[in-house]
Image (cartoon, rainbow, N blue to C red; front, side, top):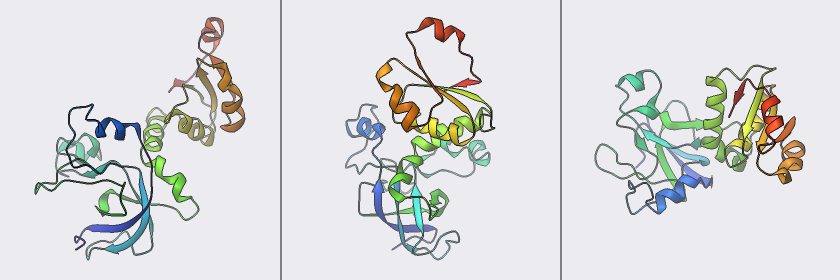
Length: 217
């Protein structure tokens, strides 16, 4: 049965984060098995607990990497639950009753409503999934360092799973974006497809010396 504070939903999409691969192979030495990975999870609500107030059946929702926290420590009181010493991961973690958590590579799952987010109707669900990890990481950095105001110049080093999202967010904030890469072959893709304003090859020492930024991601 769905817990009184829980949201049950049908999983429709789940992103693949490289940290999932580390966890599967126990490369960080903290994995628990059996394991169901996945922490970029989106789906449709099928049932809600009787104390749930934020969601209803049929809502489009997402769940990221957090599944629980103590809600009483200094970090939790500052809305920094990701630093809670008793933080519970979406998968591979243990609830306080000893039950293991399982992630989004599944057909359905439950989550406490505090760790569920509402997905806007105008945002495609498949594109929403990576925002629950990669998107949150780069968005929070841009906000934390005051780079969400128009007119800033942001340098983005490398275009992996995180930083191509950083380009999109920075552009949406109205920033000038320069992509810094070791490969000139990526120039067309990054300027035409992602909308970067300029492209710089990191081996070009002269250009690296000249270019000035408000922040480098």
